[in-house]
Image: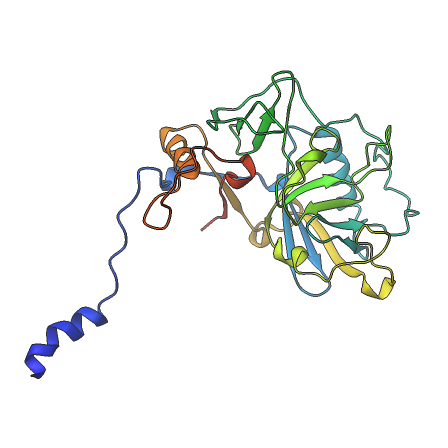
Length: 287
């Protein structure tokens, strides 16, 4: 009996074979480094960390502000003071009275759109907010109406809080989308980055109740920010490094098709298309 059971026991003990690679799987060469000066690390006083990739090419003046604010350590000791359910988590100076560091432009140009849709790969179908959406060469999701282009307000995107126009926001107060993509904000606010690690440190915070906007009514609810630093300003050995997936090759185009048509056995009805926010370009921590 034991001899008869032995093959079965050995088979159960053996590790499962790795599934065969798919044609859209990334190869090691498909992962490209995110520059250190595009990586901004917020460390909260509770020990959680939120890492933002900065969209420096698309919002250069706002990002220059953000870099200057980080280097001045302006955010150290400030707080997350707004968490609105299914919408945003916002941080910065809750008093709106703290002076900005020298050289920071209080109201940069409205870097909400740019004239050229520079996608190297696109989705099959348009969506209600754009005639076309796709991916830039450096790994950003972008959308267009045929006249101008922009980064869409997807989950985890980071925008610049502002007052009513003509205010454009300095970059001192930022928010991250923590709910269903608020695409109605597209072209109305500057998107300056994307949370690439630690979005759960924001999305799991208690919801605020103030003003119908998720503001924390009691300052004791504020979540303090311990530090905010650019990776490029840290010692080389301490820098976290991240990578985005190359969007320029055939494997990525196959990845798009797979996102637009999810595969069996779980999916039985292919959608034939995808919302850009359901097909965000992959980002990972460098191995």
